[in-house]
Image (cartoon, rainbow, N blue to C red):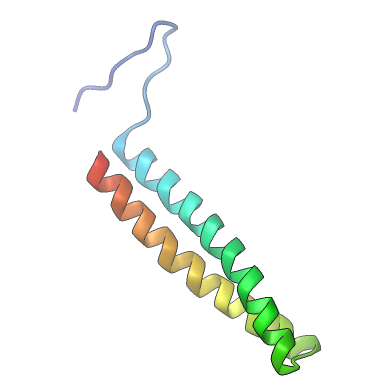
Length: 79
């Protein structure tokens, strides 16, 4: 695969770089959205302390991984 070189000598990001960037962006957005929604629901049912942090952290990681995977697939299709 040929890599295009810009006017100042820098090369364009590869397809793998696009997929990585899509995963990281999707992971960040998924984790942020899940932190907001899960914190409200956990507070509503009365979680406190360690239980609260564990519940929010677990759902943040799950949502970030799922949304990151879908964003990576979308970036791969665009590539």
